[in-house]
Image 1 (tube, rainbow, N blue to C red):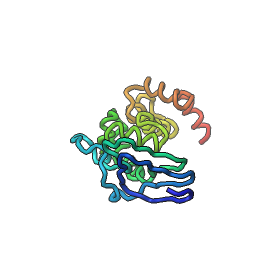
Image 2 (cartoon, one colour):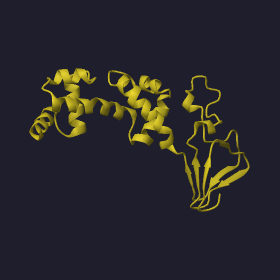
Image 3 (cartoon, rainbow, N blue to C red):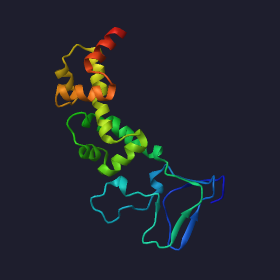
Image 4 (cartoon, rainbow, N blue to C red):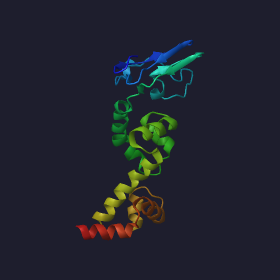
Length: 189
């Protein structure tokens, strides 16, 4: 691909015995339209989730294949994460605030745990476990600031197994105890 050009593409398959060269400054950009993807990353896996079945670039039993040059292959992750983030806000977040496992959360979005981990890393900059903790800590912080509920009640309402676990997680993530947070927030009101 020539330097300075951006090419929008759906699925394509590389064959053996070839060099796919992207000159410095060239960019191949994954189409944001799921209908442009016909390849399958895991065609023979009956347990694969729908999202794992689409693939941007594929090669099957290709020998002597090279991808070279200083160009960029842009998988356009943000275009694909929009739907997952909407699902996250509508379905996964509420479903996973309680004692749900990471596997249950992945199923709620319709992907495998491995795919969920990869997508969270790209879209959010951290893994799903950290996101689940955030989904529990933010409402806990809000309840601490806006109510006088005891810590045990805040923990229960936000999916923590105990007040002690909430205290440990809150202190680790926020750098202060829930009690200190509550006092700071009440002083700011």
